[in-house]
Image 1 (tube, one colour):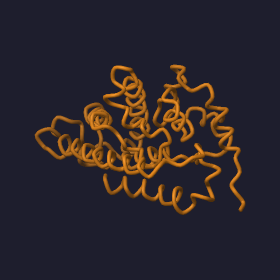
Image 2 (cartoon, rainbow, N blue to C red):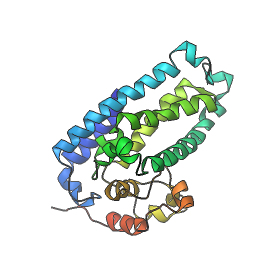
Image 3 (tube, one colour):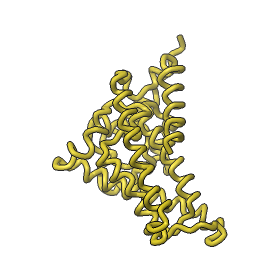
Image 4 (tube, helix red, strand yellow):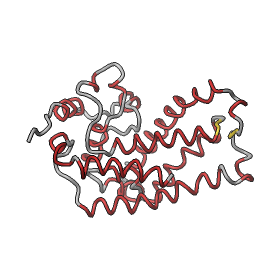
Length: 243
């Protein structure tokens, strides 16, 4: 997982923060750039998080004394390819639900400083902020693997594919640029999708837009920021520098 994370976040950082920094600067969600000390802090905590993330599957998947009690199966033909691919949307919905309520709980004043403050030090996040968690938050974040293992029959390849997608979407959410097109946030599908702008607002203001992949729970619970649509339109309407 460590190599995949550094590959995805590294490519995003190289393209947006180094190679095309000046060309794309006007399209950046927050016009300023983080300090180099911010990047170093994010990378440092990401390394700790990756260690914790690697430990959880080591215990629950690769330790036979534990894995035999899970719903993990070894042969794809046991459930068939239809089930193998069909389980991914369910995983997304379960993870998004887990994340939304866990995330909101960590914003409670009695838990925020202990669990979530480290992540929110990135008020203007970069791709390296995707896994920049306090160790306690990293343990909670890794808990989704345990939830999956004891609620849904899954092949190990399901986890491999799903967590690659999770890394990519997390990096996108902290990218600092919006990749969805202008007007996407108001389409029938787009209004339910969590965007980089939505999550950037969460980092900037510390309130609202708590979802991970979707805005389903945010819309149900009324926690989509009131200025989200306006901000999306404003950012997506900016032109690239031509000089």
